[in-house]
Length: 282
Image 1: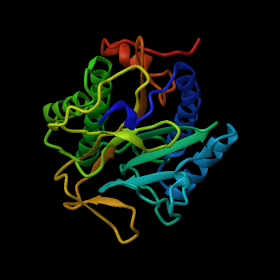
Image 2: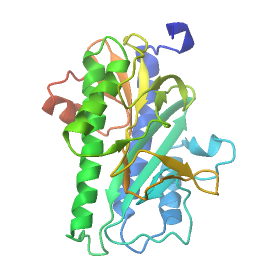
Image 3: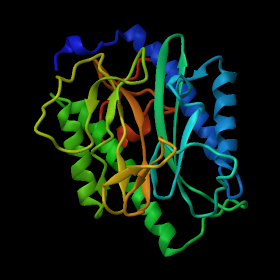
């Protein structure tokens, strides 16, 4: 793949993208705050949409043909693309992955988090199942940041997938989805180049300032084999194992990497990893 297949962003364009990224992050923060046992995934969808619109932006998920919601809400063995519904009531200890995106001024943000659902008092059950779900989410989140750290030092984009796979393999016996991968992002939510979450023979494009990608490992507690439900959207693990999904939109700058969908730009996490922070905000 050549650079002509995707657009490198200017510093001014990255600053514009940061606005979309921050709105996405704040929508996910609002969802996390509202996520307790007894809430429906449709209610979380409403909260995300109201948050995005309060900043003068709109949901880019609603721009996807045939999709009418602001978030994807995937519960337990649902990996990605779960459709919010009023009858989908969350229970304490559920593992919920929430994917969300916002568009403003023609630029896009895309991010995902995984939540272990607390009870109405804010407490998460302490059971073997919940501990396993916490470990799965932690491994997936850690692999995302391993990928981000690799991006900061990489010559080729393929090094990101190798770092993600190495991290997952070092932290448990998990399955990394291969049919669903990350992507470039900018004027559209999904752009070239693809960002694999596993090692491939493809080197990928050169990592250059102005490259912006959405890195999004999708990991299961068992097999990485999946199927799509009859709704045409929801992707579930074939062996019904639990799943986790974490994602950030990340820009490469002249001085490091800038996590556009992290509230602090990724600074604290990058510093803990010894990775240069490349934020362009004053």
